[in-house]
Each structure stands twice: as C-alpha cells, then as structure tokens.
Amino acid sequence: MLHEILHFFGRAICHQLEERSLHVSGEALAVCARDTGIYIGIFSTLIYLHFSKSGKSITIPSIKKSFILLLFLVPLIIDGIGSYSNLFESNNPRRLITGISFGYVLPYFIYPLLSKSSLDRESDPVVKSSRDLFIPLMAAISIGVLFYLGLPSHLVLDSLIIVTVIGWFSLLASLLFPFIRRVGLRLTFSFLVSLSFLSLLSLGHGWILSFSH
Image 1 (cartoon, one colour):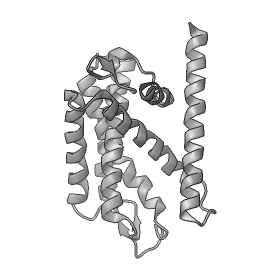
Image 2 (cartoon, rainbow, N blue to C red):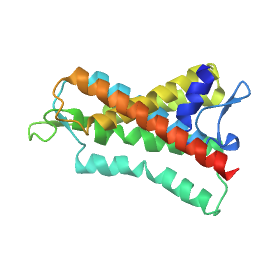
Image 3 (cartoon, rainbow, N blue to C red):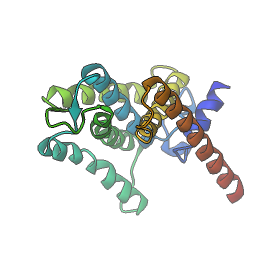
C-alpha cells in the first residue's frame, strides 16, 4: 500500500518511464532519475538552510553568487534539450547528476522569501561563504550515490523523495498565503493545498495515460 501511495504522488510530477528510472531491488523508483536528482538537490539544500539560517534575516544571494548558482542549472538544460531533441542519448547516471545540480540551486532563491525581513537592507545574503554552497552540494552528491547504489530499500528512497516533493510544494504554497499570520495554521493550510494539488495532478496524469491507451 505504501508503494502505491508513493507512486501515486510520484505520478503527479513525473512520467515514470521505467527505462529512465533508477531501480532498487528490481523496483523502479517512484520518479525518474532526473526528478530523483532534482529532489535530492532540493532536500539537501533545504535541510542545510533550515538548520543554519532558520530564524535569521536573510535575502537571496548576491549577484555574483546568483550567477555562480545559475550555472548549475545549465547541465540539466543542455541534457534535457539534447535528449528530447535527439541530438544525443542521455542515460540515468547523467540524468541523476544533472538533476542534483539543478535542484540544489532552487532553495537558495525560495527559502529566503520565508524570512520576514527578506527585503530588509540589513538582511544577510543566504550565501555568506563557500561553506553555504559546498556543504549542501556534498550532501546531495553523497545521497545521490546512495540512491544510485540502491543501498537502502526502495521504500526508504521513495519515501525521502515523495516527502521532499510534498514539502517543497507546501513551501511554495505557503508563499501564496502571507496574510495568514499564524505560522502553524499557514503551514497546515499550505500542506493541505499541496497535497490536494498533487493528488489532482496525479489523477489527471493517470486519466490522460488511460485515455491514450
């Protein structure tokens, strides 16, 4: 049942093609290798920022740091365009790596928006030192290796990814409700909105697939 639930939510964001997915103990993971990498990257950076920046007045990275971070988006863009346009053939290790590179960047620009003083001139940029870039990246790469080797069970790996997916969408949803002052209420409401949205996406995707067949 847990397997079905995880794959249900995975279907909301992913085509779930088996040949483009990592396999653990003979089971394809709930999302493809590229999406697996993206959410590993998101997870690693979010966890780091939560424990190192939570409660602080922060803003988005400086122009220089933003440029460096945006360069990490380029590998996935090249790999995606090249693959879908049949310029070259991609593979799952490459999809995983470029996904990690892409997802690792995103929280640096979203997480600071949760700071009450994100627009305050006295706010510190979310990236103050190379450590703020290096630690999440190394963590993401390490987790990526575990996924590629399939060391934990596929249920553990799938659970990590789907919890990250729901958490990420909840975080994005919370930005739509700044008028809800009570943090607990806003997070609960954002979680329910995220869960509903992902459920509708999954049902819609499933309906399209069944109709096409």
